[in-house]
Length: 311
Ligand code: NAD
Ligand code: UDP
Image (cartoon, rainbow, N blue to C red; front, side):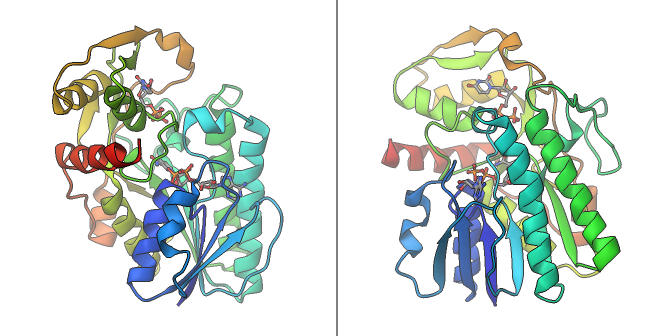
């Protein structure tokens, strides 16, 4: 199959490109390198089954493909808050452009990489797909959260109005090799800080929680969703093992000789930062026969090895 992966030079996108090429597909990677890295796709640049389309998804485009995975959008708060209007445009115009392309190509399958951020700072725990979320529409995270919520709206409207076979996955915190060193997300930040011998910047008292999914598990879940029939989602994909940020910092320092202490950065510096997050993945288990397999300790070891190579 010839498959379009938007955001294919990013962290998850580059793993998805590799996975799809390894399955014998032809992959077109559309990316403008806003938060992606050439390094991530370098291994495929000479592969005849890989094509790079350097393009901004907010500008309409045309390419003959049989399936679309739409991942183009910065995912780290540091990046998506750099140019908030552009973040909204990327999610909303990007969704319209891929959906129009899917329609033009006769109604091909198109998958949207949505996010646990559609739940905002959640009042229920763990989060199920039925929960409509608690998003502040004017807060600093809204450019990402509301952009992604509107993208989901567009996907479901194209499905209802034009019968486009859509797939919506809500991705929870994912980590692994190919994250950018300066990407600002907690796993990449902590590993980079620890490897450089700096203190780990734990926000507040480190009591916020996240549930971290290793990237190979995530890619498998996304792929299984694309294969599914008669199922649009939205479906949560993530690892339900929940850790405090303090526990994560302790794990990473222990793996790097435990010689590093950490600072407390005021939590107010991260307005709207969700306090707790953990996916309920019952739907993914039932509909996709999917659950993550990689434990945080094992995933961190693989990620640390990668960061040691590229730092
Ligand atoms: P990433 O920032 O590494 O990758 C995003 C890619 O999209 C980058 O290569 C970037 O250059 C590209 N991009 C951004 N704006 C673009 C534009 N206007 N035109 C073309 N390309 C553009 O992020 P990631 O972690 O790989 O996330 C991939 C997708 O998964 C995103 O849509 C993100 O919202 C979603 N997601 C990720 C996580 C996570 O924990 N990693 C969690 C929830 C949702
Ligand atoms: N965090 C932290 N130090 C950092 C980066 C993040 O303590 O250097 C915390 C942040 O406050 C949040 C959690 O780690 O509670 C996850 O943040 P991240 O930016 O990775 O992703 P989010 O889930 O907030 O989008």
